[in-house]
Image (cartoon, helix red, strand yellow):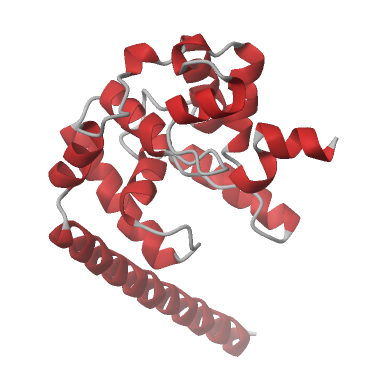
Length: 206
């Protein structure tokens, strides 16, 4: 019995060491990915380009209904967290575990903005770590309203539409400031998979 307990203890220690090595590897690799990204173009330069674009709109020109729906569906603790929502991450991991596959992400709006600014959509652990470092920088450099504003101007809504203003005009023929509740719900739902869930694709599938 003692030998069995000793063996089990050794296995637990080895497992913990292996986990530490793996986590350390992804942390270091992700941090280097983050450093490489911001070295090529700093966050100040990247966001400056976006804000200086001709079609950039400020948050006061976006429907409150859309903004409320976006936060409710995508990041309910947006105004409370500092770039990462640990509860949302754990909830998503549990749902993924139950499903046996990737079905839900735990990314905050800040993390999604970081991904849109610098990284591809590949679900790589290194990229997720790098995304976190950018998200922390964004939270330090900008207000919540500025982060929300930037996100709404760069996020993809399908059919070549980047940003809520372009999406509102393309799908509904109205400015972003005039989006109603049903339109806002449809556009926020689009973010789950813009190619399949955009308003035109869903209408064609009915």
